Amino acid sequence: MYRAKITAAAYHVPDRVVTNHDLAKVLDTSDEWIRTRTGIRERHFAARGESTSDLAAAAVKKLLKQRGIDAKEIDCIIVATVTPDMFFPSTACVLQEKIGASNAWGFDLSGACSGFLYALATGSQFVHSGAYGKVLVVGADLMTSILDPRDRNTYILFGDGAGVVLLEPTRPGERGIIDFLLRCDGSGGKYLRMPGGGSLHPASPDTIRRNMHVVHQDGRAVFKFAVQGMSDVSESILRRNHLCSSDVDLFVPHQANIRIIDASTEKLGLEQSKVVRNIDRFANTTAATIPIGLGESYEDRRLKKGDLVLLATFGAGFTSGSLLLRWTL
Ligand code: UT7
Image 1 (cartoon, helix red, strand yellow):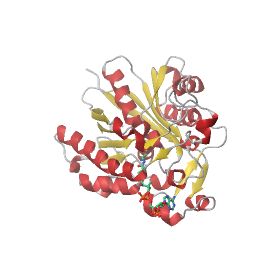
Image 2 (cartoon, helix red, strand yellow; image 1 turned 90 degrees about the vertical axis):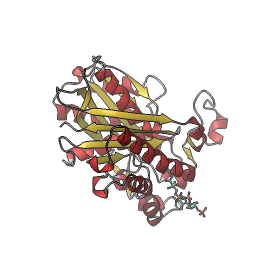
Image 3 (cartoon, helix red, strand yellow; image 1 turned 60 degrees about the vertical axis):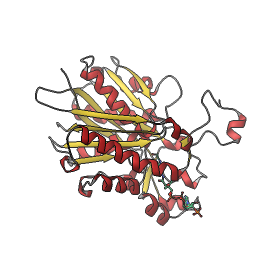
């Protein structure tokens, strides 16, 4: 029986850094408000003409170099995103061509901020079943393509970025991905969504006039769900694996608001030193926050072989999820 393990992790963010001070020049906001309410100091914004697949391709190229393999060895590519380059072809197809993964098939997965965990769980099953030996799982979003730059409620919260991991089968005695727990509750859909552009409200002068092609969010409603949702999935996955928070070596939560991260961490009883917090530099990159957190922690040697790693997320849908793994690199 095969299990899946992560054998490489990398990320890429665009060059342009936009600080809170930069935003305060064009919006009725302040560095102080953004920092104290969200924990964000700055974020990276893509250049005009840059797309989600460009960010993903840059992250994948770093990963292939890190693992020392050719793109032709990849069997399958899963791209979690809510900002695909276009409706179709999928961003996975665009990416497959850009990186030269000519032996791979792939698809996009829409799970909003939980997209990466949904994709990681899905990809792990292809390895677990023995179907594939090398699966790329990408979380990539170019949020600036769906934000209203005049809306201070949303524009300050997000950044652009991509992260990727490679899944391969474990060797005898290795654990790799241990368990995952994924949820969704469609009744939360109205609180965070982009209503226009799909089959319900196809793009038209009317949808543009009604500003339907950008993120709409009821921040307070999402906040409440987030703290409860993220701590609940984390507690449940630990409990059903007969583990407690002190067993966790590194917690990589979705980065949407430092207050959400801190409140969930406190509920879980986790030491602050075990929590990845990079929202100050990247803001909320939607499907990319967790793979960026993994890529950065691996690069900084914060992740060590044998570490028990807990990933947790929540997002539009509502969606939420947690995943437990043993780091094997
Ligand atoms: O991964 C995606 C999931 N999304 C999230 O996780 C978001 C969850 N929600 C949040 O993170 C928080 O609710 C926000 C950061 C979005 C907002 O923080 P809040 O503490 O809930 O503020 P609020 O919405 O209750 O607004 C407080 C005040 C309001 O003014 P009044 O009505 O009290 O006069 C807002 O108009 O702050 C005002 N405000 C701002 N002021 C300065 C809202 N945005 C801004 C801003 N700058 N950017």
